[in-house]
Length: 311
Image (cartoon, rainbow, N blue to C red; front, top):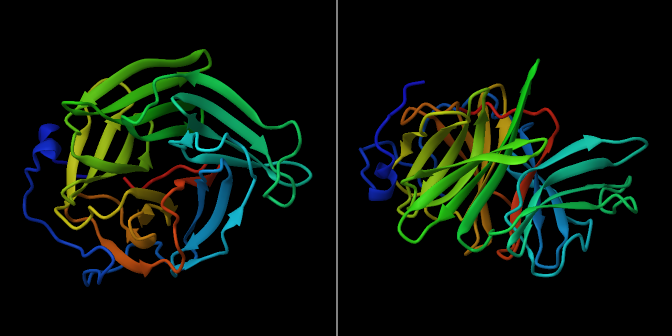
């Protein structure tokens, strides 16, 4: 994949070249649909409510939306939970699943897990666990994600955060080890990024789709070791409406992308081909027939072992 290795400050300064435009919430450009955009593609959307509850709703590429299920309830104190990561799920015997992720409660980050019963909306008593990671997770943090990647004989876990500093915007990266979070590294030049979502995982990198306040859409490939992120332009405008992006694997190398506009409560679905700069195919699938409460913090449920391959 050809990449534009321009300075990281390009996002912050808004130095954009001409590119194909797409109207958010409107008509998609007349381009071929990426492979794997059949209606079978779907994502399990979760959220944390102001009351500390989890929700679950299945969104399909049709687009369609199942009934939003509330529960488990009262997992967290009222008004405290924010910055949830994607939640990993694993089936348990005889029924239900174990769900594991990260969430900030006030200014403290916790590793959380619980096991559901057969209903999926209640927990098995005694299975809710919250492990303190550390403090400092205040309103300057705009986004956080935990990426787990494994292949035969190799595994890694990295946490990322988009931090809105006073004079700059940073992407922070940690490596998660059995003894804690280590090797804290920051990358500058991301002051105008509005939101991000993970779309690609590899042995030595994670790749995010990122929107700017001015409406541009980029990929940001962050190495898990040495080196600096590679920033690549996808589109130049019209993506500023979304406060939240949620991505799920669709086909071998595609992405089902949900953009949530919290000002209107609307969500729009897109089928995105394997990321390839301005040549990336983006097909608008339409408005999702449901409302997304603005006060919720959204995340993705995914099956353990799933690797994102959109970039």
